[in-house]
Length: 234
Length: 294
Image (cartoon, rainbow over all chains, first blue to last red):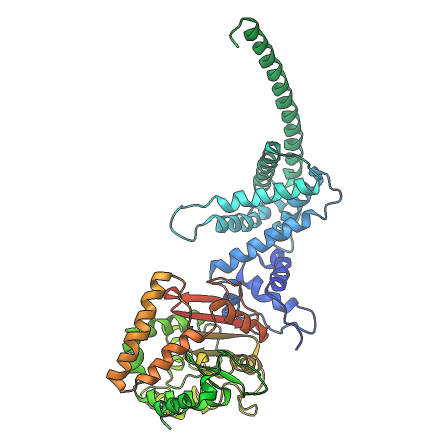
């Protein structure tokens, strides 16, 4: 018997259909239509089948959103160059196809349409943040996990060799930068890339300043130690 | 031959008593063996022994189910059918295997009718046991579905459904509730389910399974091994049959193992977690496994 397509194969196909059908159960049900010719179905999956494979009600949508986000992480590796800026830009660009929800979008109506279409991504993130149980009312962990994964992957691809504490601070900084850029993209998609560039530039300048302050502080501390030793206190 | 008589004759046969394998083995010096509750018996004897059990319990099957589970089995079956939502996307052709008394079939038809005004969904009830089918037929005579194309009863073996009657790729939904643990070969039943289902159709199995929680598990064991056979004695005078039913639950594969068997048959399932490939009911006392033919 030929191997049946696996659940992960169907999810991967479904993520490619998100720009067309959004983060919906319909997207998942239509995944079987896009299988290779010898295995493709003639009709979408039934509701039972979607629930059985991916979960009932909103849980299936969450599964699709998480698969789409995971695919985004994978796509970061295909950035034109492994530099940090290019990798983060590639990830921002990955969001853009979901903006073009309507097939005919003119330049003049781009902003108003993109606001409606950005709602899809916002709803997706809202769904991820909504708890499965009553408390807490909003779960920040999915959002934190999302930006942390991107920061970690971007650091890895760019060949970051930070160690110890700076490993964490580096990633926290990148997560904050990307999070701000993505939020900016939701309200002003056209200027998102420029905003990201400004944040990266500012961040490296800030890092330099912090490093210099740290160095100067260590000199001051050494000199005070010397003074206290000469007075016999230390 | 009644079940107690059959059990005593097997116990006297030392060759069978020495069989220590609890699953089918292919020792060339002995015939293949399988489990019948906690006993190990020849594979070719299981079918007749299970038949004896259900011949014995058929007339009071529902009474015993209510007594053993304190009516909870009705909730499980309601949830089982409710989650499948038959009729939601139009008429479905369903097959309910080991569904002799028609519990699941009736729920499927009622659900489709009441929720979606669907009077075209049909269920074919299949059971190896004639007595159980008669009980189901008798029950359906009291309903509006009697003598309609929506319900039909067939005596057949779930491990080898006749191909001329149960054709390949012909059903939208395959259900089996509290029956699969009684078959001789679970993989054979799963293979047949895969054969008769259409691409994109769903396989759903409701069965007793392993309880995760240690305290609940202990209470459940005590109840199963002490109370249920006693109820069998009091209500039907047949302790041995209900002892078998309780033991057969313990021999059934655990949730992840059964999910793997479903995948081995060619189905695609959800993740191997509660809420994915299976859904535990009451901590695992009962469990719903599903799979999709892709």
